[in-house]
Every structure is written in C-alpha cells, then in structure tokens.
Image 1 (cartoon, rainbow, N blue to C red):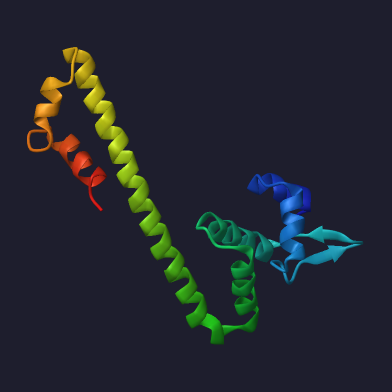
Image 2: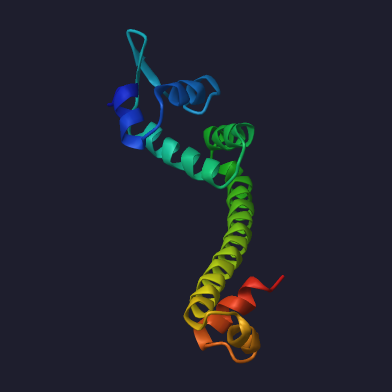
Amino acid sequence: MYTIGQVAEMFDLPVSTLRYYDKQGLFPGLERASGIRRFGDAELEALRVIECLKKAGMEIKDIRLFMEWCAEGPSTYPQRKAMFEERRAHMESEIAKMNRALDMLKFKCWYYEQAIQDGDEDRVKALIPDDLPEGIKEAYENAHSR
C-alpha cells in the first residue's frame, strides 16, 4: 500500500490532482486508514489508465463513466472496448497531424540549410517538388498532404 504522497511522486503528479480524482469517484475501492488514503495495486493501475485517457484527450466525466463501467462488470466490455477504439482513432489522427507538422519542420530545416550554403534560395526552390532528395521529398509530400 502507498500513501498519496508516494503515489504523487511515482506518477509525477500533484497530491491535489490525486485528491481531485478521488473526489470525482475515479478510485471507487480506495481504502482509508484513519482518514489517510491508501493506494494499492488496483488504484495504481487505475491511475495508469486515467493518465493515459487524459493524455488521449478524454474528459474526467468520460473517465468516470469508464470507471463506472468497470465496476459494473463484464456486461460493459463492449462499451469499454468502443471507448478505447474511439480514443485510439483520435490519437492516431492527432499523431498523423503531428507527423505532418514534424515533416514540415524537417523539410524547412533542410531547405534553409541549403539556402545558407548557397547564399540564396534559387537552387533549392528549383528542386521543389520533383527533384528533392528522397527523404526530404517524403517529408515535403507528407507535410503538404491533407
């Protein structure tokens, strides 16, 4: 069993965040000894899932719904699976957007490195899009895709 302070340190979270999660009902089986929260393995795993879902853009009210489904048992497996599938699709879409942005940065770094070497942009502009080096061409095409 762990204290709230130990869990906060383990997860690099403020104690106030853990208290908030508890008040929101995200740790339904959380034990208390003399009023002190005691986190066990189940709460640590729940916190891993909570943090994952938060990073995936899910709101606390939806995370609470997930936790309620968990408490309801196996009959909610389809809802839980659908929730994770929706979050996965959302994250894959966000990652694709971020990769396009990253590829634009990669292309522009290369572009300006060439312009610095040449003293102007004339040669490098003439390479766009068909004569770009292979890795840069892929980055350029991804950055300009929709």
